Image 1: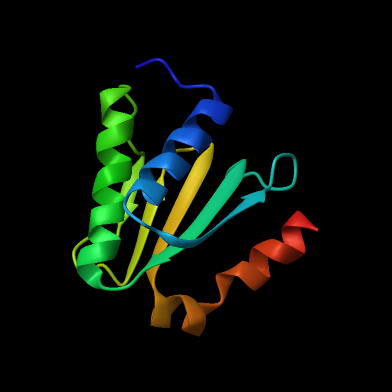
Image 2: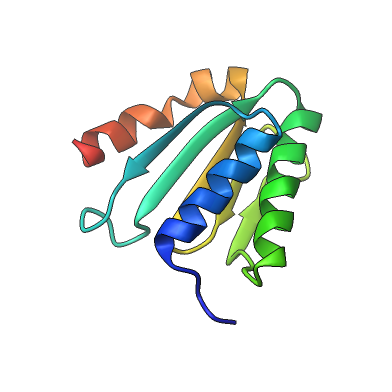
Length: 112
């Protein structure tokens, strides 16, 4: 599989999430600041059905472009879904879980 340009990957993920009404989507640019990934996207949904729908739409949109994730975690319960597309890692939370874990604070410090 040919790798997508990071910019295209980022835009496809954002568009797919927002198409399903993902809430408070934020992007952290970690290029050159992290060995794990170049970008982190964080958003949340209103229910586990919503978070799973967001993840499904991201997966479907990227699969159409022949991009498969390195891994997906948490899709079974939908409370916190992590999708790893190498250059972009996506975190999809239930709103309560997003507030509880506050991982944005971690990435804000790296992105500063």
